[in-house]
Amino acid sequence: MPFVQPILPADAPEKVAQVYDRIREVLQITEIPEVFQYIATVPAFLHDFFMNFRKFVLTEGKLSEKRKLLIAFAVAGQAGSRRWMDYLETFAAQKGITREEIQEALAIGATNSMYNVLFKFRDISGTDVFNGMSVGLRAHTFQSTSLDDHTVELINLSLSDINGCKPCTAAHVEKARQQGLADEAIYEGIQCAATMIAGTQFLRSIDAA
Image 1 (cartoon, rainbow, N blue to C red):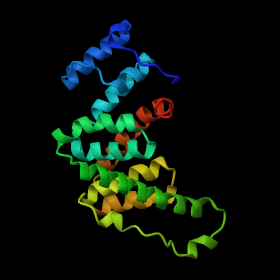
Image 2: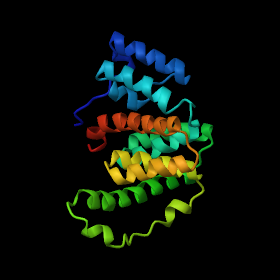
Image 3: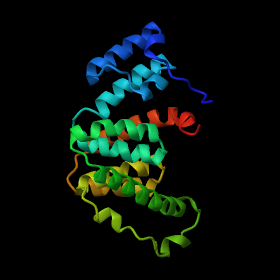
Image 4: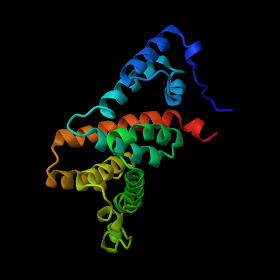
């Protein structure tokens, strides 16, 4: 049995019920999505998370809603959270995101993580000997999808940060700037990814059940 059990709307205490009402109002829905019912086991976290999710994933700012959602898909895929993948897909069509683009975001994220493992190893190995060796890993995926360069770079940057690869993160910040992305836009992408990490991490015990 999963360690975390959902809080059904009919059983919601007052603080949770208030957030549920806000979710219905903001998302213009009648049924509370399952992901929020699980998060509601800690009312303060539900409130914080939904506010962050609304602002940094669903609302256009320096980045478009489509770019933010594709970052969110990549993070959910990295976390292996099928529940979040399914829920994010409910927004895809209205934001003009195709199934192919979702798959491409996942593939870019996976390719980036492959590179993170290698370059993080070089960084923390305690020797420079590996720096002179060929990377040897094919990565044509970065240049061979329908996603625009900014979206690809934001996915790469977000997952490099999540994976703790310092040289990768620094390199992707520099490349994003060279592409013309403002620092505020870069930071907003990280805020989106950070929000999704909170959501996927909390549900990890459920997804593993």
